[in-house]
Image (tube, rainbow, N blue to C red; front, side):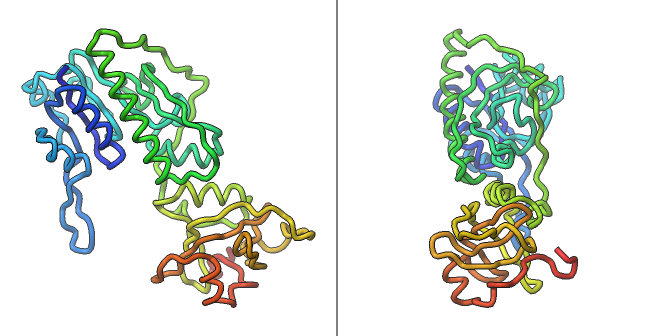
Length: 315
C-alpha cells in the first residue's frame, strides 16, 4: 500500500516511523520551514527531519497533481492541522485517515491533549478516523482508551498518546493491506465537544479561581505557555503544584486569593485561591533557573505574606 503522510510536530514522528515500517511511504507533506531563535533562522519541522532520515521525499503544498505523480493509495494524517481541499483528497483512491489524540467526538479541535487535562477527564485516548471536510468529524475506525491519573502534563501525555497512536496506526494499516479494515462508525454529534488553540495569555493565573482549576492549568499549560503569576512585578512561573488538603486545623481557604500564607514541609508554599489552597512545589523567577519550593523559599523568605499577582491591575 502506497501512502502519503501529512504531519508537522514531534508528536507526529512516531506515527510516520510506524507507517514507514508497515507501508511504502512515497511522500511526506509538512509545513514550510519556520524562523526560530534569536537569529530567526529557518528550521525544518520534526516530521521533515524524520522524513529526511528515512529517505522519503518531502513537499510543503497540498498539490493534487504532485500527489498523483506519486500514485498513492492512502493519505495518513497526524497533527497536520489543516483542512484538505476535495481535489487533493480525490487524489487518494482509498481516501485518508487521521490520528487524533482524544476519544472523539470529545475534544474536537487543535488542543485535545491539554483540553482533557483542563476538563478533569478520567480518561482520554486516541482515535483514528476517516478524513472529512470538517475538522475531526470523520467516521471512526479505531479507538484506544488511556486512563488519566491526575498528574499528567500536556508534555507527558503527548508522549504517551503519540506512542499509542503510532501503534494503533500500524495495526490498522496492516488490516487495511489485508483487506480486513474494521467497519467505520459515525460519530455521535450530540456528544461532541470542542477545544480551541491555547493562547499565551491563558497561562496567567487567576487566583480567584478554585485551586483544582489552577492546578489543572499548571499541568495543561506545560510546556506552553506555562502558568505565570507576578511577584513585585517580576514574572513567576508555577511549574508544579497540587491541591493542598486542609490538615492545619484551621480554615485556610479564606482570605485574599493569591496570598502566600505559609510554607509546609510536606506540601510546599501554600497559596490561597478563590476556593481552597494551592500548594506550589516548583517555580521559576524571571531570569532565574527553575527551583524546588524549599530552595526558593530559603532565598526569598519574604514571599510568606506576599500577595501574588499583577499589583498594578489589582490581581
